[in-house]
Image 1 (tube, rainbow, N blue to C red):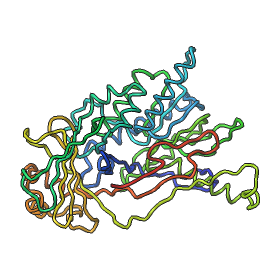
Image 2: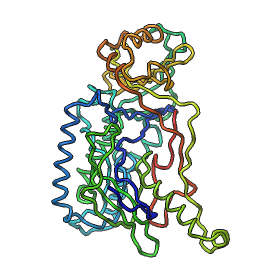
Image 3: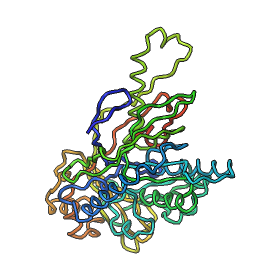
Image 4: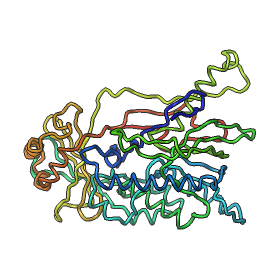
Length: 437
């Protein structure tokens, strides 16, 4: 299962479906990809049903692949907030610049994962620990409002007016200090998948004749084209989970085809499929250009590189759902740390009804970080370090948290010094940078 990469070498066509994703609120930023990382212990019948559905979709895809267009005006790789909002932006520009209609959609968004549940699905509250939370401050709200989607997003989100925190050693409920944030814009919080679902529905309702949304697809650049007229060439493959794999790999061999586009946006987050291909292309170009041309040539272009930093202070986390009683404000960020800061607890609201998703941040070697750790030991730790929260977590939830494995925070990485390739490819969003809390 191989195909030619952009620099002519062969590479495996199995790729990880899980992506490093992040949430943030007034400077607090946390990765949470539990939902995309089921283990053998947590694999359910739903996972098998998804596998069967994707297999059916693949068979359908084989039958209709020749009917799909081979060229799009714009291709966006990554169906997250940045990718979907970019599609909305371009659709609005297209609508304002033309009065003619076409039966062929001119913009396509590809994402490797299945679509998220609808924004009104109760699963976001019932299984809050599976969905990481995203904070929207001034810049995010301004962008969403500019493209006329803020009202829908605001309705799906929860206002957070400040923080309630306990210093190490403070364990009584009344010790928690409330600090309100004095800002002109109130931060709003919602599950990242819910935000994606809201934008997806906006696209389907308003721009369904222009934008094509395709889930379960892997996209690999073949060539980046040039400004003189040659388009970007891409290989598109169905991305089917391998049921036998513990590593969430997907088989992208079947239904592979080649498409072209006049404009490519890489918005695939920390997965960085497009950025990595740009880096390979930059290395090849440097190797093919002699040093005199590089230094004194008429067309000098800055090299492109993804800079990766080694994490010298790693942290991992387990997520835990907590429902706060009615006398606890449901519009605050809650935070507590154990003595010595062995483990830190951070919680943001999943909805306005007191349902929260909390993260237990710890070192990888901590005994409580292990999968299938002793639930009684985890309970004992909570009783000592976080008794104000322990009483809100029943034994079944505590056992589930003890059973699950940890997720890793993203490493520091950034792309540069340029963020484009030629005149037809550009990077947006987290594909440019990744930070940790």
